[in-house]
Image 1 (cartoon, rainbow, N blue to C red):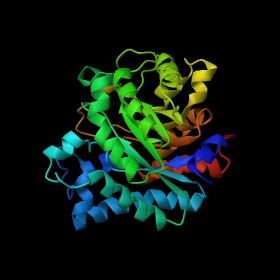
Image 2 (cartoon, helix red, strand yellow):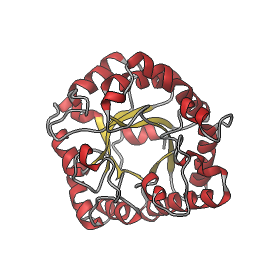
Image 3 (cartoon, rainbow, N blue to C red):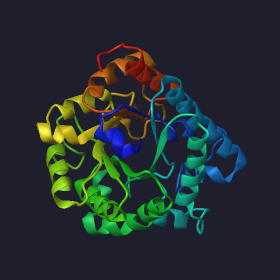
Image 4 (cartoon, one colour):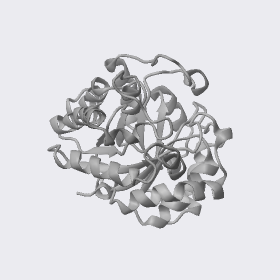
Amino acid sequence: MSLLDLVAHRSRVLTEGSVYELLRRNPRVRFDPSIAHAGLIYEPVTRGLLEEVHRRYLEIGRRHGLPMLLFTDTWRASEERVSRSQFRGREVNADNVAFMRELASASGTTAFIAGMSGTRGDAYSPAEAPDRAEAARIHAPQIEELARAGVDALFAATLPSLGEALGIADVMARTGVPWMLSFVVRPDGTLLDGSRLADALHRLDDEIVPNALGFSINCVHPTVALSALQTLDPDSAGRVIAFQGNTSTLPPEELDGHAELQGEDPATFAASMSEVALRVRIVGGCCGTDERHVEAVASLFTQGRTAI
């Protein structure tokens, strides 16, 4: 069954938890200042550490019999960033897809690969976001490389601005690969740039052909996502199919720049996630989560703890 089929049948899909934040705090890992963890695949020790993180998440999916949606470690690997990095000249995005495909093939579970892209600037600072036309120009090389590498879907995460989201969507749609966008939201149902989430989803569906596979929320606490989802009209609410939750309830302005991860224990996190999981079908973790949190979320689906 394809990812399209799973979404069409409203099947349960599990995503990973944090990768970026876990490795950023590992003393054995040094991120490239331009492309973050996308370059870890090129050095044996860090490649092994990256494999270990992904395999722990894949094992949870295998054990619970849940299909997994994996994301390439390319959130910061736009063409302009790669060109400033020590890996300029390499096909960083395609190489990360190949790395992830190898892990998925050996995992013993159904796993789909989404090619990840992100914002040009700080994901918590919408003022840094380019407008629609500039976003399409900036993001096109990376998105097109991911599409050529054979991903199952394209995915842009932690988007604070409607303008940049529209530009990314313009590029993704013309590749012919299923695509999704994921937003940072406030409890009142707005993006960080002040756009109403409902308006953003309607514009994306009205203006971009083919339409997105669905939309997502990430990098906020489950209580924030639930509050935002409750502001949506039924049509818009039905288009939000995924959520990856933070373990911190702090708003972006307070969370940004914290030296220490702000979080909560896995049981508390899963309890908060259960209500959001009634409304979306693809669920996993973001900042502050690890395999314990993802295990607790997977158990919501497979051990009857909640009527999902």
